[in-house]
Length: 534
Ligand code: FAD
Ligand code: SIN
Image (cartoon, rainbow, N blue to C red; front, side, top):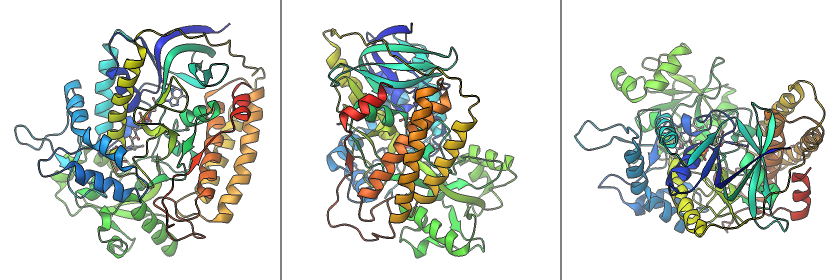
């Protein structure tokens, strides 16, 4: 017998998107906020650069929209971009009202704005180089003070529960990782705020939990997903044996950092007139090409020409973390490589986060709103989380009154009886998957590489389905099940795109197609629902 809990709204994920949705809902709404790790374990806490918003009197919404569309390679939805950008200031004012201590410019009232690739002006508000941690700490403290929000940590959502006809989400089944038992949460509205799927790649700026759980759960329940071929590779992650997943913020380039070959020469001016501040897809591809041509394991990011005090003040976290690896960024260049960073596609939603299923919403990195197109503009991600979470909370708030009557979810029947030994087989399969995706579905792709990836991903997926059917549940098993599915969806999207656009670059189709089209996948309803019920 599983434990059953009932709430008005269940939110899966305690990053920027989930926390903001919870805090923006009326205080009368009973909310369960669920997170599979510690509450600050997602990408949000690691965000460095900041939040893009039109805050300077010389900046304009039109300009920010224009920069977003230019980075998006013809695929960003202009009306969505305008909706999100024009709510930027309101979102920042709300964050300030919650207590986020944004870095000031030394004047009485102003905030310091930094610059990142693809932005035509300085418009990134930040908290030194640890913006995400400040936002996460502040919003989590606010959540802790709210009587209507119950936080469940170390609880991993397994699958959504839907009405018999599959058109209405009525809750979610969750595995409590500490109690080692499943729980059923029934709710009028369920919000997926589970982050991205960059964990599909061997090298990533993300922490381990970026396993596309939200995308996988939504797909298994019958929601469409879109544009998963556009996984963004951040150009500069630290290349060092003692450090995994350490991002070196683009703001370093915004403040004058230069990308260099091992011989100290600059190369970005040869690729784009904006040099180091070209959009990310261009910089990552240029680095990939330079590394392959030179046979170099890494390139270098150099800001040592700036005064040491300036570097230490603006980038205290990066300075300290590099120093702990024996690199003094005030005197020497930083070895860097590109790494998987951000999932531009995701669960198809409208401007309120509504998915294809009634009662189910998605916000943040797991969603596809149309904002990012073929390549996300730097620091537009957190902005999207804050604006969409607010729109989503407004929509849910309106739907909740008067209080609805819902059927209770059925008893969920896991069959997972067998102890399958240690997690070794799951972690080995995960490693194989990540290597496969890195080698064949990375910055530069080929048709034969995608075909190879597809056939092997399908084998790994079949194996993970068998393990899921037979074995007792564990965190790694659930993540393997989700990542193999999302990887298949990524490859399917990549194979469907017969052109090169934004983050998807194919040697077999190097030209830009005449018409910009989103890649939208629709699940075969019955087959996927059957799998979810195993
Ligand atoms: P996340 O913050 O990733 O949170 C996901 C949540 O879902 C977590 O709480 C996780 O535990 C939970 N979860 C996932 N699966 C399950 C499950 N099955 N069950 C229960 N809980 C689950 N963007 C910017 O705009 N500006 C930046 O400066 C910036 N810097 C970045 C730096 C780094 C190193 C990284 C990795 C990303 C950066 N990004 C930045 C991107 C941005 O941080 C993310 O896109 C954004 O934080 C995503 O927020 P989210 O709430 O959607 O997801
Ligand atoms: C960074 O600080 O470089 C990350 C910004 C982002 O991903 O938007």
